Image (cartoon, rainbow, N blue to C red; front, side, top):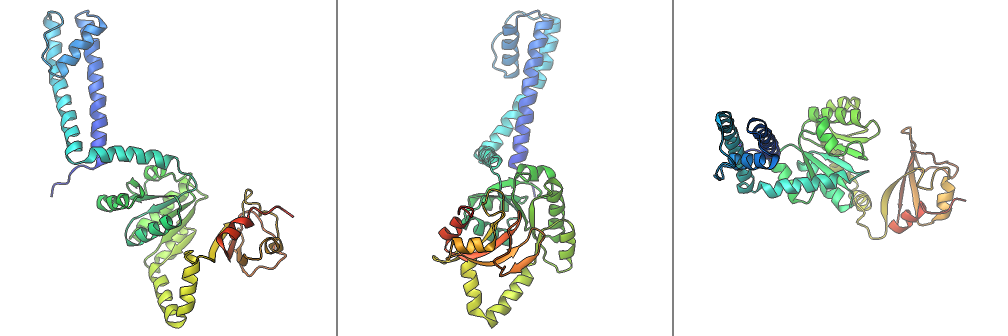
Amino acid sequence: MIRRPTVAALRTRMVTGLGVFAALIATGTAGYMTVERWSFLDALFMTVTTITTVGYREVRPLDTEGRIFTIFLVLFGVGTAFYLLTTFVALVIEGDLGAALGVTRMKGRIEQLSDHHILCGYGRVGEEIARELVERKMPFVVVESNRETMDRAVAAGCLVVEGDAASDDVLERAGIRRARTLLAASDSDSGNTYITLAARALNPDIFIVARAGKRESEARVRRAGASRVISPYAISGRRMALSAIQPNMVDFMDTLAVGRNAEQMLAEIEVTEDSGLFGLYIRHLVEASKQVKILGLQRASGELIVGPGDDARLELGDRLMVVGPEPAIAAVTQKPRP
């Protein structure tokens, strides 16, 4: 089966052809100025009309050296012009010219992102992740190597980078150094391991959530640098068991977790220098808002405290798990210090 060139390949061909074309014009102009002793304008005019085969008469009569030079210029120039023309036609006929321009615009939008999420893989799991991120209005970039899958992500309105997510260059184009989180959600455990290794090397501080389909892969992905390793099958199994044992509790937690309850929602708040929480005690938050309940506190070290006491002091990097109305949760971080 003959595969048509990708947008990236056609764009590369176009840029290469334009570069060669410009070099030929420069060479031809310099050649006529040297061989025939013409002025710059006459030499440029003769070069352009020769390469493009427009057919105007010679600017001035050519001597033997000039005619030999013109023969070589025609051979190389016509070939280059034909190469450019066929590449441009391919872009237009395949409808890829608009796609190429769209890629350029998309690249600009991605370069403006910061503190965003990078989703590697847009399969069944990746698509569900993307849907959740869209619902929560979280900025993210999809990295996908499969053309059809990539087109589906673009059709869904996602920002997309085409290529192998384990490639340093591809991750750089996705803004890995500015990103907040990377989600390795490809269908391959080994692929997710390589993605994790590459991402951790480029951004040691990024939070990485990796998918592991097999139980024996979890430790390997974690050693590669994943902050969290998720097994969809294990989670599905536990969820089915809990749904059978405590169906109402599962529905209740789902409603809170996805924020579909108009009055209450679960949220995670990170303690940063800008949050206004650093140095406060749990009792200060309780006093600031009676509507927000503190469910848990995860220390920067990874220690998880369920139902932290009033005397627990908040340090940089800590994360609070709270439940309450969204406006009240947002107001907690804006309360004046005691």
